[in-house]
Amino acid sequence: MEVIVKESYAEVSQAAADEVARVIAEKPSAVLGLATGSTPLGLYAELIRRYEQKELDFSSVTTFNLDEYVGLPAAHPQSYHFFMRQNLFDHINVAPENIHLPAGIPNDCRAFCREYEQKIAASGGIDLQILGIGSDGHIAFNEPGSSLASRTRVKTLARSTIEDNSRFFDRPEQVPEFAITMGVGTILEARKVILLATGEQKAGPIAQAIEGPITSMCSASALQMHEHVLMIVDRAAASQLEQVAYYEWVQQKRSHAPSTA
Image 1 (cartoon, rainbow, N blue to C red):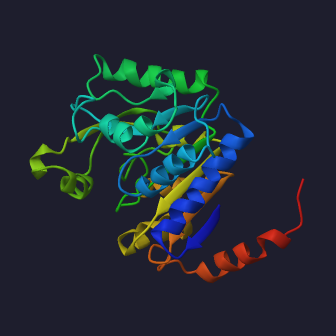
Image 2: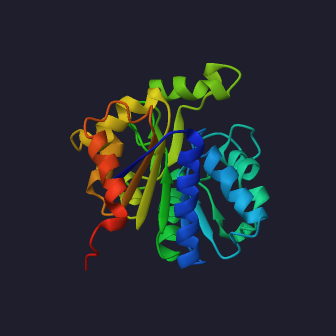
């Protein structure tokens, strides 16, 4: 796990965009795992800017989103389908047939979840998975207690998650109580993972995820078992890390480190 501490949200977004651009440059047909929420908005804006400047080409890229609320149609303003169109897909040249999101109203939830896993496998697996982190340390909608081997499934949302997300709805009771989400096991199969976090409210969960024990009570802590994880955080989100000085030292020395086989 590599921890990168930046001074601002803009720098976090820029660093994440650099990683996405690097993956696409190395593999134009890259498979990207995408997240929603306020944290990746700066990243998506930067990707759009680079596309408009002809620095990035998404024509051969395939995407899979982490999750979607159960019960919201794709056209609902708070659905993640709507969010992704508004904040990324409508502004870049990704092919519509290469865009995959969980269905908010599937005919058969279990069958859909199996098929979603099959589509990820058929695509060759996810090359780069982008994540945020919840106030209780969850990734995607893998709430505390989620199996660290879990696959795409329907998950009951925690009350804290519903409260956190209620700011996006007119009334708290409008927030769906269930979501289809990639599982922790699914996420861990991505070849590379980037987790973004900014703000003091994420300092606690970031400390648990990076320096705490690996536990289902903080699903992000499972990333400690992944070979290639970048935790890109701002100064505020890093404020509870005990080893932050070491992480910054590593970044300073990175260009001088000997190569390894």
